[in-house]
Image (cartoon, rainbow, N blue to C red; front, side):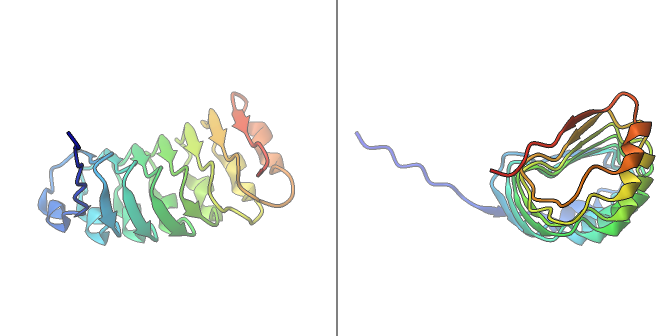
Length: 173
């Protein structure tokens, strides 16, 4: 017998923004598509946002920078494009930020304001600019993965202040 699998592609439910006390939102691996709704920025209690392993496309909404309690942000394995929004630098409590396997093009200097960040994975993107010198301000950073990008020049000198840092910067193949 022949079995046919039908995949239903679902758009992100924008009504989820009405859940004002929501602390954790995990929607990974659901073949969700479309753009991430800017209404996510209204989830003020949110501490963890996992939308990795879907089919989201377009820019990351700058409204995510309004999530002042956010500690974990997983955006990897989608079709996200453009620069990282500068507003993400306002996420004072962010500890883990993973956006690998997308088409992100630049890291803003404001990323250096993420002083509590411990792990940053931006591997397999299209980052072609210089790495911001402000990366050295993230003294809590332990893991920096930016392999398979095509950025120019060398590592920022300030990374020497990140004394427990493990860096993965394999060149583009």
